[in-house]
Image (cartoon, rainbow, N blue to C red):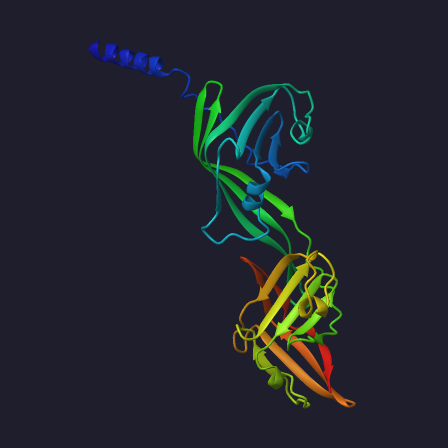
Length: 319
């Protein structure tokens, strides 16, 4: 009898301690895709009458979702606070993007419950999406996939807090415009240096080698002259807001032209990658130099793409 009374007392004590704050209301958006509002920096998920969304100011959004990859094991981390918001909502009926994206959201259905995240970390891992040309094995970046996870997030519910040590939000994909690479492969030597340029509107492809006179000697070749891309032999791609020419580099730069992207070639490996190859032929009173790039990779930040097995940089003539 004493044992029975003790068990009943224990159950009554546990029940008395439950003041409602320990109730767990599960939310799960793992099976639904994430979208971004076009009018504002809100990434959201909708499931029937439920919605989960992240809202960031412009400066934080560009930091959280850069056009670049993150390194392995080094996600971007954004603190959740009154500015960097994570919110869960429950409505009286099924909802759509019209309930979150417009400046003035739809009046129906009615909002029945809302949880605000008061603490935690938004972790974001970015991976480049690449297309591959199987004819030459070149690649181009077409977008980025962002894998979003909440760490130690606390939601403040109407009946008390709810904490998750780890809450996967899911993935969000953003497309980017592939670099045009609209070059005609008719390159020219700079008028004020030994750099070799190819221009196409706001695009500039530049080859800057240390031993110019040897690599571009005025003598026909039976086998190509070669050099490795390195700190001395540089290959770079630049994209500007407006068209540029040799005058941009040799004269006074136009202040209305801004640099939008810059990519630099990764150092080469002997007989493997990053090889500059020059073939020279006689051409009347001069010589024609043909430059090919073998297995070259370009990098911006942590992101890379390849020019392919054999890329024609261009040809130019000398006297």
